[in-house]
Each structure stands twice: as C-alpha cells, then as structure tokens.
Image 1 (cartoon, rainbow, N blue to C red):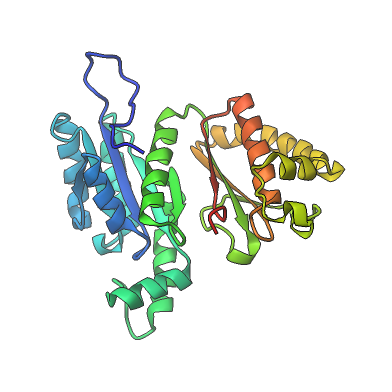
Image 2: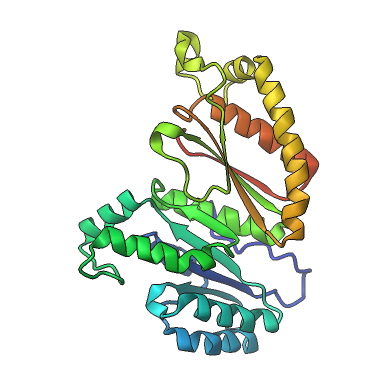
Length: 302
C-alpha cells in the first residue's frame, strides 16, 4: 500500500477535483486513528469543531480549492446536534459542487467498552447510567448519519495497518463508482456478524470442508476447497438465486440513491464455505459491472 494520492479522474493539466471526506462514527470507533492516517496521506484534517461552525468551514473549503484540495473533517457527538450539523455542512458543500465522502466508523459494544477501559478516557455522553448505556444512546443519535454514509467500517478486529488499507481501498471504490460500490465480507458466525453489513447471508447449510482432514487446513481460496464447496448442487442453486435477487435489488438501490452495499457471507468459522461463495459472488458482480467490488476475508488470518 502506497501513500500516493487517490486517482480523482481529472485529465492532466486540469485543476484536481477537491477531495473532502467526513469521518464520523462512534466514540472509540477509530476516528482518531483514521484522522492520523488522513494526515499521513496529505489531507488537511479538522477535528472537534463546534457544530455551529461546520457550515462556515464548508464555505471556506469550497472557496479555497487550492489550500483545501484534500480535506478530512472529523465529526462526532462533541459537535452537539450531530444530524443537524452534518446536514448543514453537507448541504453547504454540495451546494458548491463538492460531493463529500461520508465514512462511518464503528465497533461492537464489547470492543468499545474495552477500549474505554484500557485508555481510561471518558465517553462524551457518560453519565450515571454507565458506559454501555452511553454507547447505546450514541448509536441512536448517530443512526441518521450512519444511514447516509458511503463507507461503513467495523473496526472491532482491524489492526492499524488493516484500517489504513480498508480506508484507502474504500475511498477509491466510492470515487470510481457510477452505480453501487460493493464491499463483500466473508466471516465466521462464531466470531460475530460484521456490524457494517447491509445484507447477511448464511451458508452454513452447505457441507463443511472442515470435517475432511485433507481440507481442514486449506482455506476457501485454495482450488481443492473451492471445488469441494462448488461441487455441492445446493451451492450452484444458492448462487443462482442470489444473483437473481441482486439483479432485482441493485437497480432499485441505485434508483433510491444508495451508493454502497455491504454483503456479509458467513459460515461457522469463516474459513471455507463463506470464502468460496464470497469469491464467486465477487467474480459475478465484476462481470455484471454494477460498480467496483472490494473483498475482505475477515477470519483468514486467524
């Protein structure tokens, strides 16, 4: 992974299109780490600005495209009425012809509680109800913003290097997308369902290669496991039904203005069946050319 600027699609010799990213999400979800990554990528990063000033910031960004060619704005509950501030800022940007990429970072309650415990930081909404209630309240407040996000990332199990790779990859996908930007995630149900998923598919009905010693230690990326999984008649029938469903859903999502779709495909451990089906779905989506497709096998390094 390099730190080269993202391709913004402009012709040589023309002024670059402004890159504005709004980084938002749950407290403890990784916004501070993401802000540092954007600084390393050459972005001007603005954090912890009162909500009342966000519209003014949007005006400043729009009127000085050279200075603010690449800008990341960190927005969270410290801004006050977050949905209101977010809407005003986004409206000001889009009114000036700038379409910001909205990135929402989150994590499971268990991970968020552990992070606050380890860092000894106080949750911005902390009161006598306790940390778990504060997290639940924050989820409720930020749900209208999450619903408008172009990229939703669950950082629960992401190392800093992986977070960096996912951010750069997903930003590139969104910028290149004419229709939907797809993120496909294979996972193991025993490790939890990915929070960012729009659609969750369960492939545990297929026979598990884990129970065959010759296949147990081979992942779904190997030819032997792929052949075993796809050799089951139910696998082909499932893929055909899934493709028919997406042929129906994708145009409808695009008509409704949706810009990203995250599909999570799970089996027991996330190492065999889910990987095979995810790779097959990714290949089909690329053939259909609905939009860019990113694949993440969450449990592969376990």
